[in-house]
Image (tube, rainbow, N blue to C red; front, side):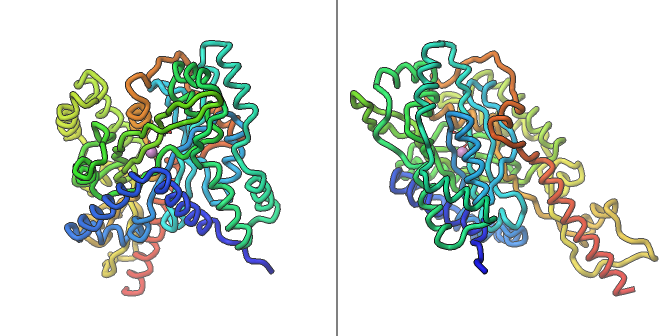
Length: 462
Ligand code: OOG
Ligand code: NI
């Protein structure tokens, strides 16, 4: 009997190959990885409790391989095939992000592993956007764009054949898996030769830079990769010191004792030479990004986060930029005073998701079993320990900020169109998973195990 290579292994290897390819294509990304590595080692040395926390949640070994990337697709068929290809690697669409209100003509999902163990084996994820061509108001140009996209095939024949083989067999053997990885890598590669004229590129670019980035190229080149750091402020400062030009502000929540959700920053996109069908030119799209991940928030916590972020941006009265960066960070710090900053409070107020671990010597009173209602009391008395469930997803406002910083000041447009998850799912050929449900399940599983251990343990002692 043939044994299939596990999806986790394929994903981990693919992620590694992608990182190597991107370091060759964008050498500055290699410098960034080095910096992040240095900062992470330092943080672990300086904060032994952080190290213990990451060991307990299983995140420590994954830290050095932690990364996400982003691609932008042009048509539904590409999205469907991308979903099939990612399924071979155990990555599924999670969440719906609408970037249109932020002036970027795409909607998106994140392909990633789902359960906690798989995530710890390889947290690789790809933020995947689909261009909304219907937002090009010039009918003639829209038609030209559609014609160009209609002709392109972003996957190699072999990549699609091996994907179909996986679907038929339910797995790939070692040879096929290795070939699959190499073939799929081709889809994400940068091409210096563009299949359109310089004039068409310019016309697309004048509509929106992002439209040119998708339509004028042979495939969805990976536009950034993002390692995970334990101290994003140190990386932000370190970038400037090492000659890596940082974006003006760190997106997301401010620095806190207990990090929440996701903080992100990036280095500015490179200007790269492109050979159009008739002339030479250039294109600016690819960059490197850094993220610091914190605890996943519940609906209630997320509502508070969204509210405070809106308040901070309203008090700034402008989009954060180089000129107002310092003031924005100050306002953000002050505004977020309203967000409790200890894990216990976050758990007590049902603002964030946690793992619950039983800590031996629990004394049972009478015959009553411990229930979920007792948990927070047991946390307070130290009989149960909580550790944060890390946020595995993205933030639309931050994503828009990342898009914008790499599209230039003219990267923003106003579109009168409604967000539409239904249309996106139709293009995807499946529903997207609800990320809140995934966190709820992960927390509940941990609570169930914890209660079982507490109750077994106390009976044994009774
Ligand atoms: C995607 C931007 C979103 C993030 O980290 O929020 C993203 C893009 O630029 O295509 O990657
Ligand atoms: Ni990103």
